[in-house]
Image 1 (cartoon, rainbow, N blue to C red):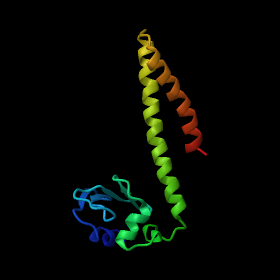
Image 2: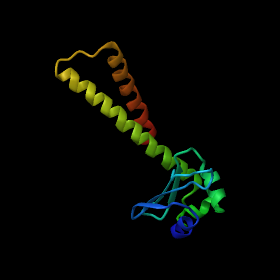
Image 3: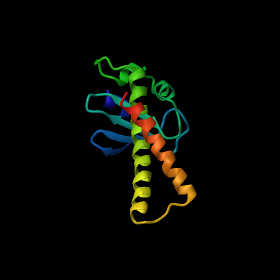
Image 4: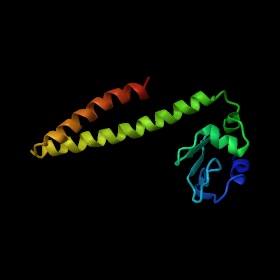
Length: 136
């Protein structure tokens, strides 16, 4: 199925064995903004960095959503959940970095200004919330 999808796209650039960039068929795209990834279990993940929805992309390709998933019981809802989990993990990583930087400054006996203290506390709060979202 991946070769069928790639053949319908323009300006396809290979990023790795299972990842490509191409022009998004759902909008007037002159440079590649569509990420195409084939996961190890055969799922095909499409993401338009210009903001097109998965429904718009598959519609422009003339495909139904179920064509992106092998017959393993994986659903469109699972796909959306997987994207959210990936996004949550990226945000969690960024918040953990902010905490680590703030704590490194404190260990070096540097006082954080009020803005940095507030950001440090916000990061700690977000980490707790994200951990619940990711590991539920």
